Amino acid sequence: MTNVLWLQGGACSGNTMSFLNAEEPTVCDLIADFGINILWHPSLGVELGTNLQTLLWECVLGKTPLDILVFEGSVVNAPNGTGEWNRFADRPMKDWLTDLAKTAKFIVAVGDCATWGGIPAMSPNPSDSKGLQFLKREEGGFLGKDFVSQAGLPVINIPGCPAHPDWITQILVAIATGRISDIVLDELHRPQTFFNTFTQTGCTRNIHFAYKATTAEFGQRKGCLFYDLGCRGPMTHSSCNRILWNRVSSKTRAGMPCLGCTEPEFPFFDLKPGTVFKTQTVMGVPKEIPPGVNHKDYAVLTVVAKNAAPKWADEDFFTV
Image (cartoon, rainbow, N blue to C red; front, side):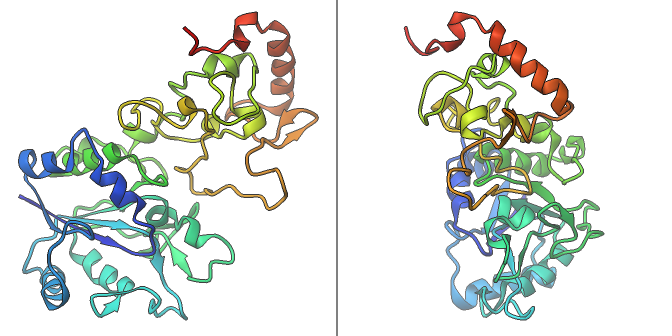
């Protein structure tokens, strides 16, 4: 039996909703087939008031083994480092985290807010929010750069806004079945099995990207979303086009640009009108280009690709 405690800090509950829609495996599969015992979860837990406080203190004191602590949402430290803006079970949530982190065998941060601070940590960050072990791309976060859990691992980060449901459940299964040692974490503590490739991998619009055949409208079923709509697929690490959402689709397949939500800098936001969903360019060449290519070479590639684009590159690839 693997005990899982899921807590929620400064969050919108988006990752909880995502988790409850997992398919491979489902939440029911976690319990029935993989021996996971959900001690408490904001949407599934039945304990309230004194009963919930008793459960939490038993985990803190080691009376109830805490195998996996899952945290969703940012760690709110305001005001003045007290954490009083986010109270839970008669204490600041950050105090529960401090105590539970000392006894948890594994800690999993789910979603951008828990991993890097997310939207709450955007400047000027009045809530003094942080991720568990990062503040955006800066190491440290709430628990500190050198923190490791009882199992000797740092916080396992599963970013996304929200995180893909199957990323969450498959990592929980890997821990519960003793296979987490097979999972390699990258420099941002993300499991490489999900975050080693770019979101562009598997995108059905890759051929349009190659020929610089673009689309300028949301929902269009043809054309690349990078040039005019600011798709961040070529610069974002995720498996959204390999492990489809609801086993059916992804943002790019639905005609929406990737927003880069698995990267620490998310949300990429510019207050200038018309710049949120538009790739910023210098003399027609994107300021941000796919890794491993310099701007001069990319400028030449763009001109050559556009001139070489065949007629079908502008066709609707869904037309039958």
